[in-house]
Length: 189
Image (cartoon, rainbow, N blue to C red; front, side, top):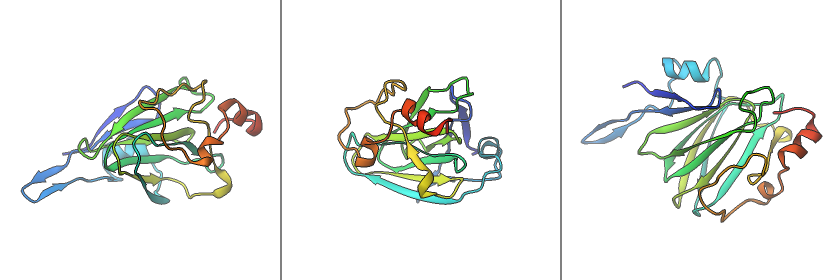
């Protein structure tokens, strides 16, 4: 059965619902098929430059809000392989009608869903079950100097995290507010 693509209120951010084939042996899910119509309309001509895995043990952990600064912006497809996470995309494209808005989707292996996040949007997530694991497909190569983000608790963005934060990296604690990032970088991601 082909995947189902759901447009969110933010242009270019899609929830992708894949439908596993289930039989007595277990299940099979096609996680990415570049030539299927649903993928083509959302991923377009982007390649896959890197694939990353993330595991978070503690419920309430927040990772993000991350992105790569121009000219190294990248699109991401994020899928939960184990556990449950609340996955967030924040539109940071200044010319977008939804600039500063965020969209969240609960990702689980049972739902078989993924979040597609275009260039110019930040990404973050909060862990809802212990030992949650994510798979990321990135359209661009990682560039250390371009790796950045904005604060998870920026009042201007007002992301409504479902749980109080329990774990944050030192890096994420020290990310700038969006207004400070814009002053320093003179343009949106």
